[in-house]
Image 1 (cartoon, one colour):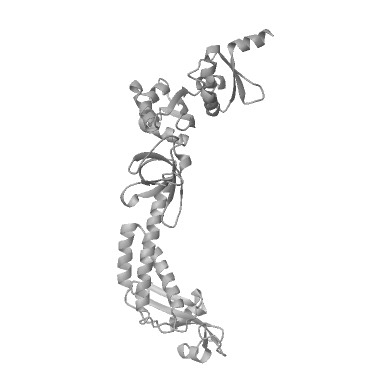
Image 2 (cartoon, rainbow, N blue to C red):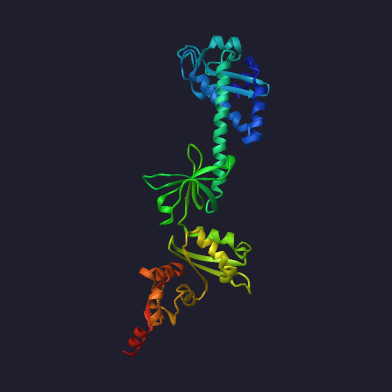
Length: 375
C-alpha cells in the first residue's frame, strides 16, 4: 500500500503519445485475426520492459519486476522501482534517501520509490519493439488458430494434394485445407497403402491421426491404412449411416488387401448390408475404388457371438459354431470344400474374422469333426 500511495504522490512519468495509434492497430488486429487486445497489450508491455532492461546506458540488466510500463490509449509511460537506502551501493536498483525525499518527503529507508523514466529517447526502440511484438503476435495467433482448426479435425477425413515425396524415406507431404487455413501434413511410408503409387499433384483422401503444435504451425500426421479411413468413406457414401439408421460396429483391415466391416441396423426394416453396398454395388464400389481395389466384406453384427463369428467368416459357409468354455474362443465346423475359403489365403479370412469379433477361431472341416465324434 505504501508503494502505491507514494507512486501517486510522485510526478507522473512523461508519456509518449503513441497509445491511440497502437490501440487502433490492435483493434484492427483483433478484427482480422481474432487476437484479443488485452493479450497484445500485455505482450507489448512485457516486450518494452525487456527492451528497456537490455538497452540501458549502464548496460545493467535490471529485474523485470523493477520496470513498470503503463500503456493505454492516453499514451506510454515507464517507471523504475528503486529502494530508498542510506548508503548507495547499486544505482540501478537503489536511490539515496535524500534524493528520494526530494521526490516524496514521506519516504523512509527501505521504502520503494517509483522513478519516472524519460522515454523520449527510448521512442525508436519502443516503436521497433512494438512492431516486432505485433508481427510475432500475428504469427503465433495464426499458428494457434491453425492448430485449433486441425486439432478439431483429428480422426476426420480430409482431401489433400501431394506436394512432394521424400525419395529416401518414401514419406509423402500433403497440402490439406485451402487459403489461410491450408497446412502441410505428413503421410509416412508406414501409413501408405502397400502397392499404391502417387505423384506430385495427385488428390488423395487421408485420415487425420493426430495434430501436434510446432514452431511453424500445426504438425498433422495422416494415414491411408487406418481402419477408420474405411469408416469415414462409408459415412460419406451411405446416407443411412449419416442419418443414424445404420451403425458401423467394428472394422478389421489389412490395408491394400482386404477389410471386414460389421454393421447393424439402428431401426427395424433397414437392411444394413444392403445400405452399405448400395444400388448395383455403387456405394461399396466407390470405397473400393478410393482404396485402390481393396476388397471389403460387409457383415451383420450380432449380440450372439456364434452368429457374429458365422457372419464374420463369410463368404465361407459355416455348419456350426460352438464357444469354448472359459476362453474367448470358438470352434467352427465348415464343409470340407469350404475350409480353404474360411481360412483364406495365408490365413487372412480367419485372421480378419478373429480381429473383427474379438474371438479366437479354430476352424475344422466337417469330415474331421465327424471322425472325432465317432472316436
